[in-house]
Image 1 (cartoon, helix red, strand yellow):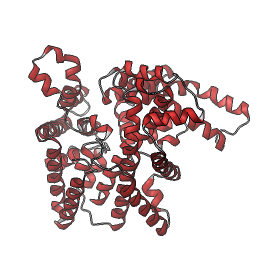
Image 2 (image 1 turned 60 degrees about the horizontal axis):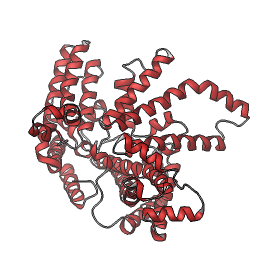
Image 3 (image 1 turned 135 degrees about the vertical axis):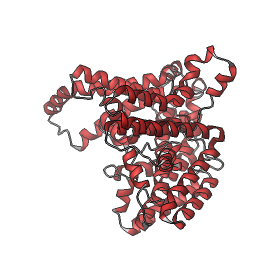
Image 4 (image 1 turned 180 degrees about the vertical axis):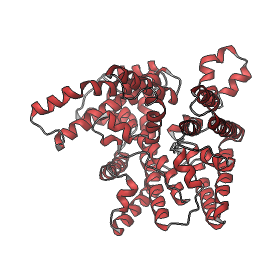
Length: 476
């Protein structure tokens, strides 16, 4: 059951009504029952996998309290929590050829959201091990932390100290929070349905069959994929956070205008923030972080982003994507003094609009280059996409017209996609410092109403007819 389906809207409306109708002490139970039902609808047999992850990490937290400071205990508990993820995501690739067909077939049934709820469980174990969080002795509330239905399929990966504290705290209905949540959901639906879903067929036309279109078409499709991926994932995250706010929970922003970043480092502070901070706190810092030699710091960056790549998938293209971003950050760290000297020598203020615009463009190009690997089915497929791009490449108006036509664009769709992308960019730019909710809350009431009205009209009249494509991050 996807967030974009009418079934989900009906489901959430029922949960919302019951949640606020029952006494405060029973609200967590309503949310837990809804979460179990939601995950069962996604795939009933896999509900047992989610329950196993919850039970193992819950018991692991209690066990770690008695063995605080012992790293082998943390390693054992973390491996136990990670075992389902390792089995379903990596077993077939590494050992599938050596096991019976029935075992191999079962390993291919990847539970939805397993990468997300497993990382929530591991974060809990790490916080208990460090003594930053007491182990949760209420199994039901801990189960809700791991499985809360708005977050279970595609995140955000909310921290245990934040969400569990809210689960255990009575909450009165806050109309202001509810309005912000509804506005954020509306923005998320616009991103997913109007931007991402409209771009999906044109991206597929250029990247799924690159030999059937001209090189410029492949290049344009790869650029559009960068927009599609962002709108698809950020839209789903915004819907999830909006649902949480309507139920009375506060959730930090997961995306904050990443394509307006002036460096790859800033990009990762704005893109999938919950995963970036998870990798920082539970991989990068334990490796030594930046509190070591420059060479060791660069190695730590490469390892951290290799983990990020492998978290997304087992294909070599994901490993290359992760290592590429690790290399970007390592090179950025090594060249920081030289780049500062170049800016001083140019007599152009580094924070001036032209300088920031140039850095945004360079950052986007670097990120786009990585997305080609991310989108390709294999490493060789990514290299083939790059090899196709120079073929008959030309930026003349006739060439652009032909390239867009090969992707399936007509004048009407160009206007539709152009409007959607322009509104996305305009709002992102305006909200780049604070995030969408805080930015919109700071605007006048008439502006809030006008924007919401435009978003509703766009969803009703510009979203493609039919079922919404499966979100890209569902596969992770």
